[in-house]
Length: 429
Image (cartoon, rainbow, N blue to C red; front, side):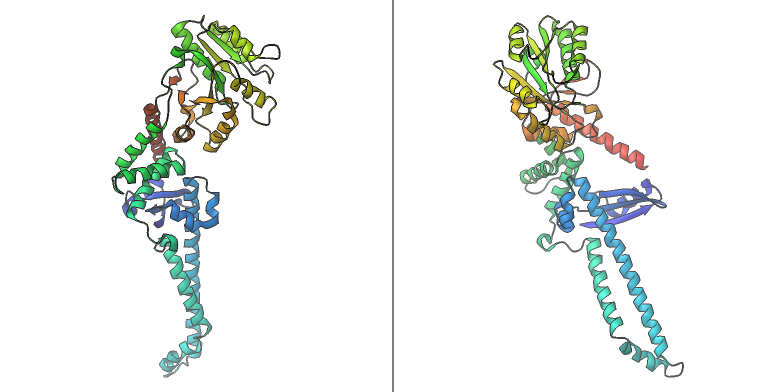
């Protein structure tokens, strides 16, 4: 793995230097503004496993590939700075050595003889210090240039480099380090360790589309009882409004009902009631006098019932009560987790753990229009096995709600990645 630092007055000039000197396969570890322009740290044949071994314990704080790249770039800067300081110290030692030689040399015809003897006179501390610094600078040079890898990973094979480049692109797409590595390994296995990067990219996206489950039938046609669960701000109530509006446009209002279990917050159900009044659809509230099952008994003649819930966490009052009444209902309630595409993967996973006790039948992904990349939410769906029923990509009711299709979602993720890359290039220029 070869790491190199570039300086230029503009980002465009720096990127041109990277392409000219490192080629198209160079990976940008970091870029930042410095006095007089910009600085880019790049790597060729970048291997994340090698980077983690070189960084040691400091790599533990890197939760994703981009943070690891920043740490690798910072280490490279420190090594280069230390290399520069070592060169300066060697120069100082040489200067002192020259001065001592001059002091011990008589200004006479015996200058040559004295000069020949002076190295022996100063051979003690100066020679030792100089040799030590030379060894130090050689070691630093090897580390900076990437010529010496850790003993346990002495040689990075071509296959590993190809796998790493594919994994890096998948991480840029938004997938986790683990999932990106698994998909890239799968490509190399299927192609006996070879294959072009673009072929691997297409195969990985196809595998992702295959791994993301989606609901075969649409609720608006199939009917039934569906509950939306998830944290506050995920978009549960707005999504129910979109579903209800689409249903009324197709089938009318007579066979639809809305229910809310959020009796834990003051006026929490007001927005749902507004939707009900606009669409002329009844809204029922679960409270101490009306249990969820008794309300569903009354609504047994409705083709579709949509249940809104409170966005509670384990520390909130009523958290277990709400999820328990969904899971233990005598009615066939299909609970779906609502997750925002703008959430961090760790938050998505923790939310999933919070709401598993509701016997989740699938999920809905919201706010795709606000997310920089979509790989995080698609990876979440693939890793948890939750079937994606719908996704939303805006605030317009009922337009910005779509029945989920895995291939379309993966394609949207590619378009979002291209848009992000074009934005970065434009900002750099």
